[in-house]
Length: 113
Image 1 (cartoon, one colour):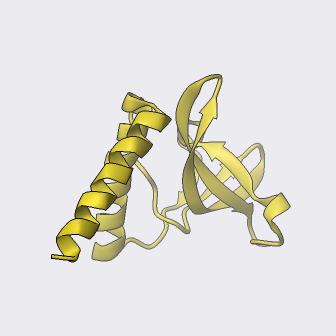
Image 2 (cartoon, helix red, strand yellow; image 1 turned 45 degrees about the vertical axis):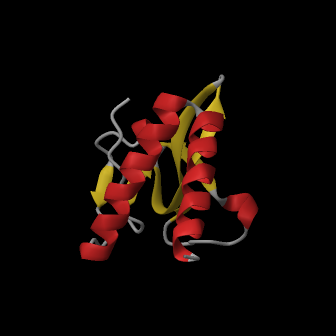
Image 3 (cartoon, one colour; image 1 turned 60 degrees about the vertical axis):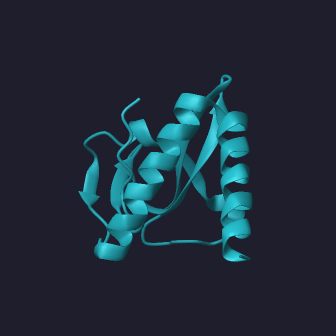
C-alpha cells in the first residue's frame, strides 16, 4: 500500500460530505493494519468524540478540495508519519509496537547518561 499522509486541515469530499482531517491512526481491518484519518464535517468541526469519522487513507482518492497548511515542521512530521505508517503496515501492529517500545527504552537510556 502506498502511503502519503496529508496535513491536518486538509479538506475533502467523502460520500457527498465535506470533511476535514484532524488526525490519523492505525486500525486493524479484517486482520490487516490500515492507516485511517480522523475527520470531522465542515463547517461543523469537532462536536464530540462520537462524531469523528475514521476514513482509510486510500479512500480519499482525488476528492481533495484544499490541502492543509504545511510548513517545515509539518512536513517533517508527515515524513516521519509516513515511515511509521509504512512500518505498521509492513510489519504488523504488534511487531511495530514492540520495535517502537525498544526504541523508546534505548532513547531514554541515552538521555539519562
